[in-house]
Length: 107
Image (cartoon, rainbow, N blue to C red):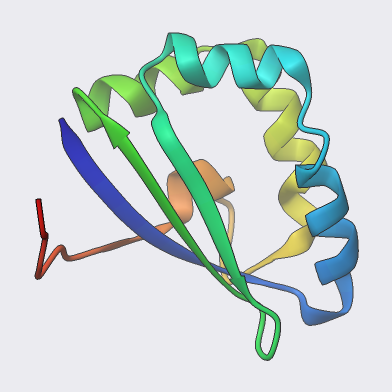
């Protein structure tokens, strides 16, 4: 199982709304994540500057990313969430996150 850590930058003026949307993620989005191999998925927010840290586990990162890219619900979710993010250019959040190096793991 691959452990994946990543970060993104949120617009600080939109943090409350971003958090609200994640209290009620669409059921078909949750099903697509599970179907495409995203497990133990968590998001952590630093409200002081809008830094978002994400973590998930997957048997195969490239397959998980490709699987979600092929899901219609992901396209809708990414468009819905796009206004919340900074520094992504033309990329969606699931394409533009910054992967973090795993430097320690306590099993």
